[in-house]
Length: 203
Ligand code: GLN
Image (tube, rainbow, N blue to C red; front, side, top):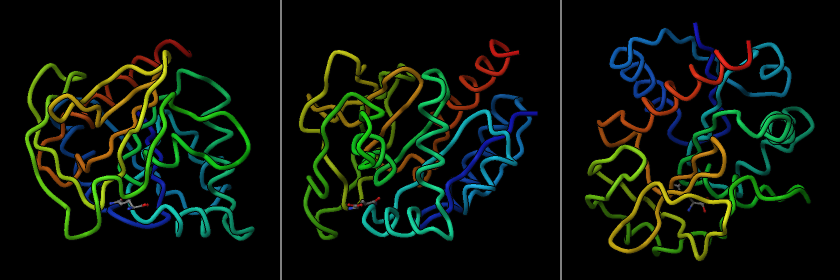
């Protein structure tokens, strides 16, 4: 049974639960989802992988760094403790991976601009090329951030036209769109398969 930690600071968390459950059926990998609200939830979850949903990154930083929660520093420590730990960060989650804002190194090797595609009115849907999955994927972009550059340690995992909209460093995948709202669980399947391998390797 794989244990998946879901960061519950704000945003589209419930759609991630649905997408993870679909991915579990599709891959045949049994999962237990642990909702993470404070640092002790992460400790007790003994998670094999983490999902960082979208929302508003400023709010997520405030609530996640609040001493009552302290979830964000705990999540960043957990990620940094082992470079191979599988993480899926979507939209604001991708912002936090590229700019953890805790004085430490970025968790994916890319620079990101908040609301880089414009404001709410500029939210859009478009077919993207999911290089990580080897196929097209329905991209849902909501007040989406935009990668302004990516470094040597980042692999481009999704493209909108010529532009990177997904990057991965080690097993940390940062997507500027919302795969959990697309009805396609491909990236959640990726997370479960990667976590399964990670679990097997770390035993
Ligand atoms: N614009 C948001 C931010 O800056 C991200 C939007 C989203 O996660 N849907 O945090």
